[in-house]
Amino acid sequence: MRARLQGKSLPELVDIARHVISEYGDEDLQALVGSLGARGVDGEVKNLIFAADGPKPQIVLPDSISNTIRIVKNEQYCLVYDLPLEGRGLSWADLVAWWVRRHPEQAGDPTQAPLSLRERLRRSLGDNGAELFVFDTYVKLGFDLPALISQVYFHYDPYSGGSRLPRQRTDFLLLMNHRARAVIEVDGVQHYARQVDEPSMRKPGPVWLADPERYAVMVAEDRQLALQGYEVYRIGRRELRDPQAGQALLTEFFTRLLSRHGYLQPQ
Image (cartoon, rainbow, N blue to C red; front, top):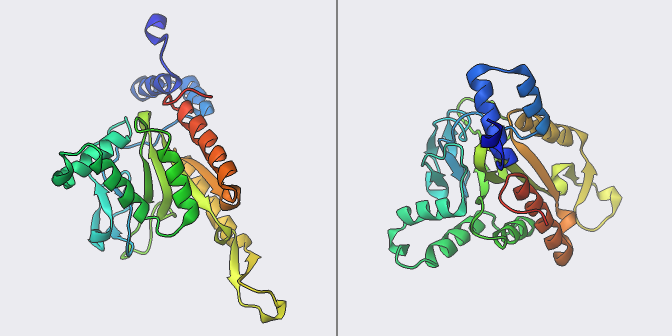
């Protein structure tokens, strides 16, 4: 048995351990896997709703990541990846192949489909310079990697008034092998402060005041995502003010994250 396990990466060993736990049960092994922080999200990805470039989609039934859902309004503004992923995640190559099936006129040119898909994903980010910067920096890392999926919807049920995950949408999502999933948020001041109209302050431009309630809601959502197996990472927009330093920071972050899951060698 030891010889069969030699040479396998940490994510591969964790996946094997999870199968053993599921089949036979082992509290000690479960504790070890939990201590590694490498647990993926339970359940298969059945619907991936992302890249809305207009009004947000109205979705019925909770959790568009792990359950079958239905879009009842504004479907024309978003993309829906509905092919099975199992535990291997979603790579750029997978996403481009799906895109070509939707746009067969691009099949003859191997460069057109990736460029067309990239521009469609960028369009979902609108004029958000920080998110565009994050996306463009990741794309430069290469094609043989998990796709950085923009504007992904988790739960949104406008008719029931409730959902099991409090966050409706995330800035970016990486679906990696062994069911590992990373949520990446790009935070501006609106994530922890509120804009107020206070003439007495006599300051030019918008005035922002710290909002502990807003911040508490955000970190509570992060905890819920983490407890369901998602890795959650936040990038502050102020970290990206200097383009050169920001690109170096993002490149190091993505390289370390992808190395942790067996895609790249750490630098």
